Amino acid sequence: MAFDTDAYIRDLAAVHGLAPKAGDTDRADLTSRAVRAELEDIKTRTQALHDWSAAVVADHDAAKPHTAETAAVGAAARRSRPARRRAAARPSARPQR
Image (cartoon, rainbow, N blue to C red; front, side, top):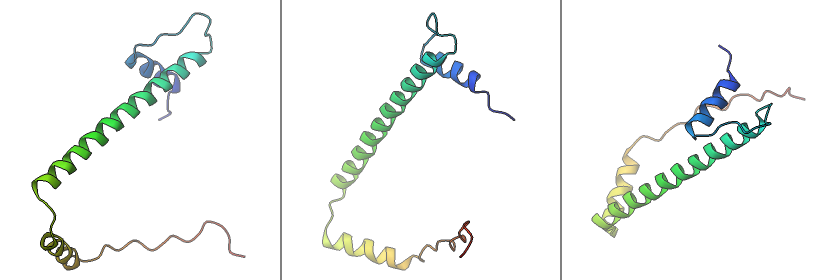
């Protein structure tokens, strides 16, 4: 299935309430404005997620103060879990010389 770039840009512009300007026959201006609006929206959502996660961490830290005892318990729990193994690296795509 082919990706329809024009439909994607039209949908993106509609989501952000944008319309083509007069004289923009190749839709370059609409594409640029739609992409900039989407990137700004992504930045806003990313910042909100960052703020939320920082608040969750701060709340967790405030509810359970870290002491030498809790650090030792956490370290013991980590040691008791099996280590995660990474898959062997794939051979290089470049020919060997």
